[in-house]
Every structure is written in C-alpha cells, then in structure tokens.
Image (cartoon, rainbow, N blue to C red; front, side):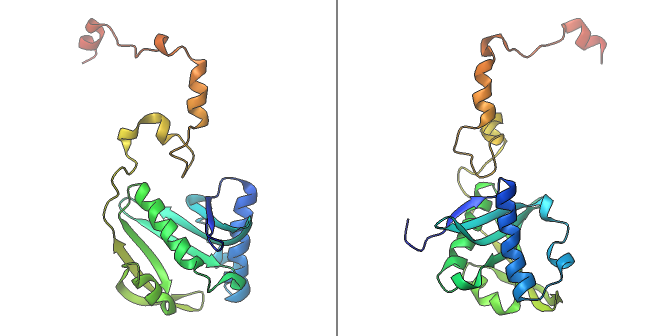
Length: 200
C-alpha cells in the first residue's frame, strides 16, 4: 500500500459508526454550518457507511443508499487536514467499485456545485436543475457504468449472499456454522403426490 493510500472499510461496529459520524460532524456541521437535523437526516440506518483510514486514523467517510436500479452516493467527506492528498479520488473510486460489485451500474449523487468538475472526471453528468439545501448550491449528477462481470447475484447462493457487507470473498460465520449440521441428512421434504393433487 502506498504511503498516502487510504485503507477503506465498510462500517461494521458501533465504534466505526461513531468515526463516520464524527467526520461528517466535523466537515458538514463544523466547517459548513449545516444544522444537525439536516446532516443527520434519518437515512443513516438505511445506508451502507464507509470509512477511510490512514495509519488507523479515520480521515474519510461516505454512505451509500441502495434503490431498485441505482445506488445513491452521499455524505462524502474528508477531514480538512488531509485534503489535497488524493483521498477524494481514492474514496470515490472505492465507492464506485463497491456499487459495481453489488451489481449496480447506475450511480446518482447530489454534488455541491463547486465540485461538479471533480465528479465529471469520473463520467458523472448533470441531470435536472440546480437546487439548494443546507445553504449550499447543489446539482444532480448521474453516471452509467459498464456492468461488472462477476457482480453479486442470486446465482451466488446462500452462503456468499449471507456474508457481511463487502466481505463477499471471505468465509462467513454462517458457513462455519454449517459444519454443525449433518449435511447428508438435510433434504427438502416433499409432500406426497396425493396431497399435492388434493391441495389444488
């Protein structure tokens, strides 16, 4: 890993959640004067949160909300003392690849208008009309990406799809628990043929 390369982690513990929320509070409430209720808008429990660590110090965060045919990137934030080091690019690249692994090829976001050129470098384009909230000008942007070969699907089966978010290549706890079962004795019970006919 390069000296300035962030290590990204999907939030999986209360401490990691606090780290993500603290970065957002520093950036959006502390720097940009966003009111508390607007920053913590009721969507945090319906999202996947990510933190970026530099020498185990949390310096970046974002969240993703999942919709039917698109993923929405939200709350990207880098601590002020670590800006200008390429972490924004690292964070956005990580988020895009995470979405692609989950099978999403259409991504949507609200960018502060001043950051429009940053997102355009990744293929995002403007849609809709400019708008404002929390005292900043925003634009809607969307990108359509090539589908990722090998993205998650129902064909992956129960064990892979039960693994923790982002850890789909690692054996999960539920897989390890399956050794407690006598797999040869587990069979799908089928009703007798006369029952199936009588139930129609």
